[in-house]
Length: 126
Image (cartoon, rainbow, N blue to C red; front, top):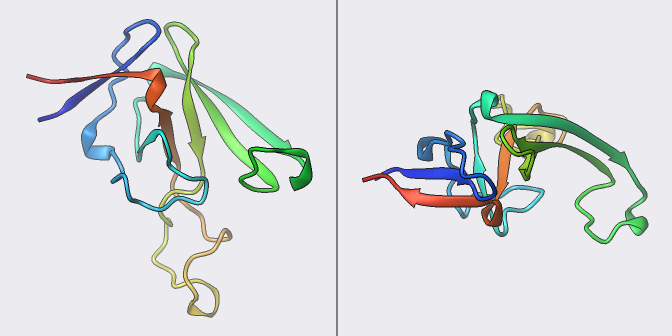
């Protein structure tokens, strides 16, 4: 049974597919609390805004890295912020990493589309 994910603000179907949903216990460096993460989205439903901030770690309370590379995802219909795109998805290569210690930040990674659960209206398809 598939779920339908809509923007809570305007009710637009965001065309997110449950097949691309990461499991809730999947580890991400930027965390996954209170969110749903997808491996793929329909780009026609969103406006994307790059957000590159470089801050010393002591200047930010929501610290998740010294260099913050993420992209804002906004609903194309109403402009409401629904989530962010992070570059901490699964590695694009099956490389064991430097010294065989696992993939590092240097290894290119798939994008992860992270949606705030509070910004989504989720219903079941019948």
